Image (tube, rainbow, N blue to C red; front, side, top):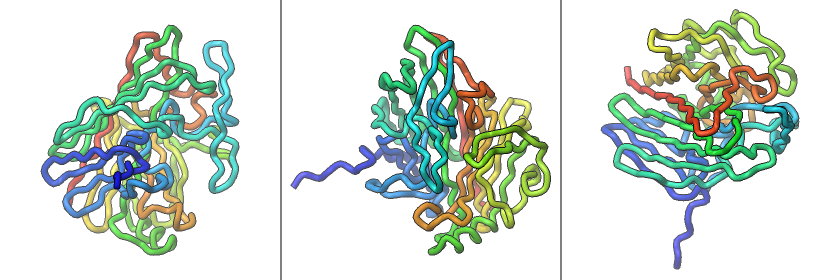
Length: 318
């Protein structure tokens, strides 16, 4: 009997010290990331429908494009509207990269590199090739994503990553998972909170205050988010850092390079169990939602040019 390939494609396992990860062929998604016996990202099975965008590379745009329509370089484009849960919002959400099987470029004990050349699509006909490398090291995982424009015209570009950070427990109900995540601390060192409409499309920004001020790393108790933050504070080397701390002492530092301009957090508070991993989504992004329409932090990749973003996940146990 022939063994059928997993529905998420080939599975690439990498290891370094106490760290291990599995990256799948479909979407170059991180299917699991562990530190010894501790789950750092919420895992999912090799045949599972990816739960709540877990592990996605969000490209060529993160988050949403209102109505799926945008103008670039004097032309109008229409991307498929695909956001139907938890309510129809008529947005094109999270790009195309997660739909496709990526090509394996290299695999070692510590690292895996995959690539994807976007097909010629109505909503994104630009000849852009992505390369994603996941590499484990002494402190955790480094993710490097590059986009090369092999075409003869500029290409619009924005990027995000969508890890679900495990809260350290395995709540059996949505209510338990809400409570477990609420006991965790989250520090987003940013000064502006993005204000959105009913479709989660930005309408402006406001200074952080009260529940949206996460600069000191409060607990998530009483905080329910599907929100983004801008005007990040940076270290001397240009990096921006978000810190997630669990009651069991696991701390995950998400460190974005100078291209990371926004952070999104989704707590899934009150969501049905099937749409509620046991943790929270914390998403480093080069641009906020609707950037393809507003131009906010949107990058134009010139023909022959490559742009690169690097995000590190550093894990410690207190």
